[in-house]
Image (cartoon, rainbow, N blue to C red; front, side, top):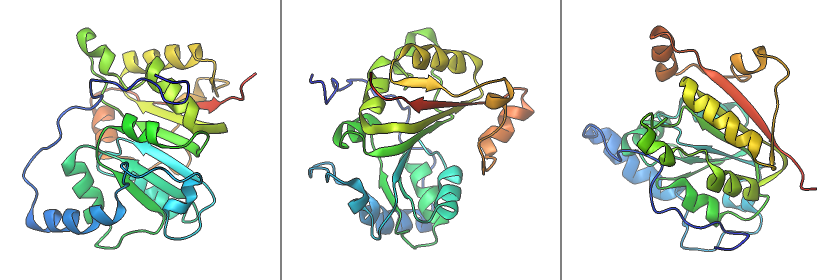
Length: 235
């Protein structure tokens, strides 16, 4: 382990890799588009990761575990001048996102379909202007809490790759994981919680597209929380 590259985890923070068998069109789209957009971690990361994109971008944001891609697709459309990296190990989620692109590879999108910690260790320091972790697997059983993505090691990883002033956004409908995240982020010297009242974390982010998962959570009586943390400058 080094100061710049935290120790690699030996246990994945995500669950299953595959769901239902893909339809022929989904598989064809996945096989055609993913190789064009996937980041190659076997090659050294560029010093300026904006060069990873097919046209100039102002900055780069990362979404970890984008699910079916509803939020990532909305961000791509809303901010065409920004670069976005999406991570999703679940094959069906990746296929759903790529199918929604209708066969066209956006010039401001790159993808990775494996463990996000490998990508975080590959990226250069202070290279991201924001990171989104939205509705991650809460691993509710106590014996699985070590698999929750938010923890000291991964917060160290995020702190290394985020620029001072960059935003880390976390959304969840599981109270215990929200409290867990608040506890860990407020204990980490690189992050400050941006909230002045309860309404700050009850209101969705600006431009937030409701997802099917979120709608299901609300129907079942679970209230989402939307936390925002700022990457503070080192003393």
